[in-house]
Image (cartoon, rainbow, N blue to C red; front, side):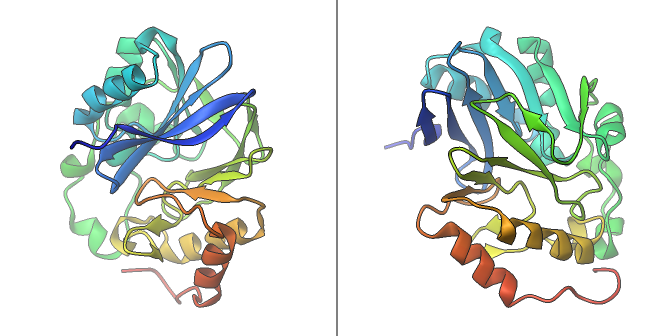
Length: 242
C-alpha cells in the first residue's frame, strides 16, 4: 500500500502543519495551513516535485489557489527546484533569507566547499524565481500561528531553520539530518561546513517537543535531548570542510 503524501505534525486552532514526502522520507517539504485556509509551502523539492506538492495539497483538502507563500530554507535544488513552477501555478510569493536571495533569483546554488567545487554548477542549478521577501534572523512569520526564523548559516549563507514557539515544533532545514540517525549534511554541499557545525548548536538552546527534518523522519520522542546528545559529541572541525 502506498504511503500517504503527507504526515501530520501540528493540528491546532492557530493552524496545521504537515510533512510533505517528496522522495520517501529522504527528501521532505512542509505544508502549513492557517484557519482561513491560506497555505504556506516550506521547501518544495526538486524541479520534478511539482506533482508531489499538488497531490499533497489535494490530500489535505486544499488546492493551488490556496497557496499564498513559498518559504525556502535555502537555495539548493532539492529545496528550491520546483519553486518557479509552483509560483507560476499558485501565484504564491517566494520568500528566502537575504543571504540566499540572489542565488534563488538566479537559479544557482551557493558556493560549495572541498569536493563539492568539482560538481558542475549546471547539475545543481534550478529554475530562477523572483523573491518577494528577504527574511532575517528572528523574524516571526505569520504562518499557522507563528514561525520564528532561526538563521543557521553554513550549509548555505542564508540557511534558516524555523521554530513554532507555541506548538514547540522545530523544522531544522538542512542544519541537521535524520537519515539513519541524527547527523550532518554532506560536507561537500556546504558552503562552510565548520560554520554549519557551529550554528547547529543554536538548535540545542531552543525549546521544542517535535523536530522535523527536510531529510529524514521527524523525531517525536525527546527530540531536543537527541539533538543535544548528538551535538555534545561533535566538535567543529578545523579549516575548510572537504
